[in-house]
Length: 378
Image 1 (cartoon, rainbow, N blue to C red):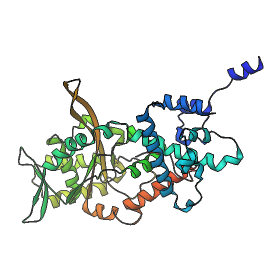
Image 2: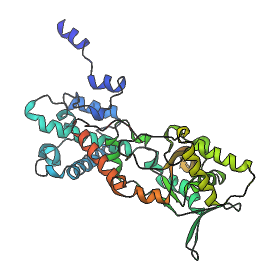
Image 3: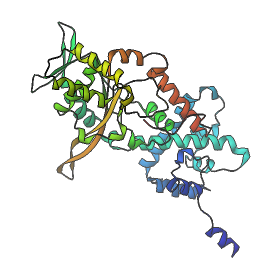
Image 4: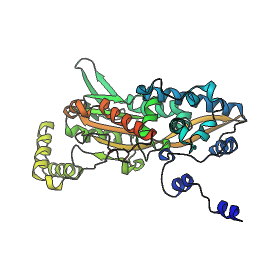
């Protein structure tokens, strides 16, 4: 009777803390898998069948990737990694990682710690390689980035770059346009480990562009161009992801209203002078749009928004042609050239940004205190 009562009162802490408490399994110091039988059920609930050779090969593939990732991320541990889990021959059955990660035996503390770290990396990798982007990367990138590239015109004679309309006379001179490079696996894994509330399906910047303009006015002209050319549909924006630390939108619109009311043809120099004066005179009313990100330096100034595009992928199933449709997000960053140069230097640089992310990932993998790294996502 006592045994029955004890069983009735047992609940898996990790399950309840994750499902009800909002605590990611990546932050759990241990699992609760007693033996290989439990491990087998765990693998099945995860979505894979151990008896299926294709599933088993995939699991071992991600195990090998995770081992290599950890050895690269913690170079100071070289020669100290427990061979019981880092050597595939000694490990044998990869399901043992689940049992090791659940161990309460103090003699297995090091093995338990690294088993947890291994499983965390594997978990992130599984999700990264099982979403829409992994399945349709080529279609997504071509349908989002292709139309934008078509609007870039380079005047080789005058060495100038423009956003150039295909249907009207609208043209915006810019300094440059950069296509966000494909995020490699290591970078994506580090990002998901570093940002405690981020999951693979919510990575919104796998596809994106950065427009570097000559001045502040051109930032807003570029946004108008993107919407006028149907490259960005603003109803599809993910509004809580927008950021504007360059120039307040409310003051910009007021300045434009003021110039239009005077019915004057102002040069770009005059327009930018009006914008500068407006900001100085009405700083207390400035409405910026901040998006906190602990890994980004507070002095990094830019305009950013996330929109979505309807992607169409033609497929064939059982001899019948079909078209799969889904919305996919992409990021647009815009900044003027002086800001761009400043952002590329010192603590504001992308290299320093990645170093801060890597440090946070290392701390989380070994379940160490975050030491000031918050749970903010960008």
